[in-house]
Image 1 (cartoon, rainbow, N blue to C red):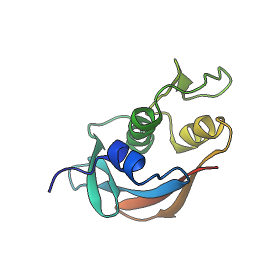
Image 2: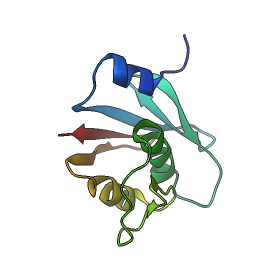
Image 3: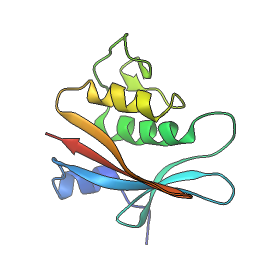
Length: 119
């Protein structure tokens, strides 16, 4: 079984209204996105920055591509979301795109659950 290919599933299954995903932290501190309990290629490790916002930004940038730039929103740079800036900045930047929504549904000790909606 390979890594979950979000772009392929997004196209094939027409997830145009949105989807839920989970970030799970490993014992070594790596943050990885899982969808439907399947590992994706989106992960970040290391120290000294906000891994939650970094891994979400990587996934959104890969899935959606270039986004409208808004200089008033921290975390929105060069048409892409900037990682490491904190979840609230990623949320605000993503939601600056009309009809896009990002919510944190659950926060646990080793994982968080989120939902992305496209209206």
